[in-house]
Length: 123
Image 1 (cartoon, rainbow, N blue to C red):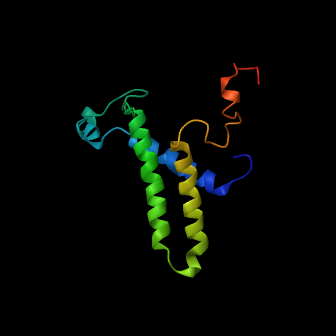
Image 2 (tube, rainbow, N blue to C red; image 1 turned 30 degrees about the vertical axis):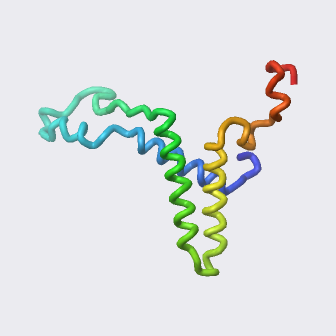
């Protein structure tokens, strides 16, 4: 991200927001609390609800959905005037799909496959 890759920054920010939304407490829990003032929780943190924890599969599903949304939107932008927007959406999808390909495929990973056999600090 230091290189100011706008597509990567945009895709990662949106995906982090989608992950936060996926971990949010279900709306049903808030409805169970009661709406009358005398039933309102009191004190610091009393209105906080425990967040759901996504499994690895859940995280992968959210990231795939985000990439899929971008690819679908890019496919719908067929007008030549929107070619740059479609290209940016495809680039964002590629960034997200790169994270799903497994370890060693992200740009931040500086080790090569031959270096992975070396103990840490020996490279």
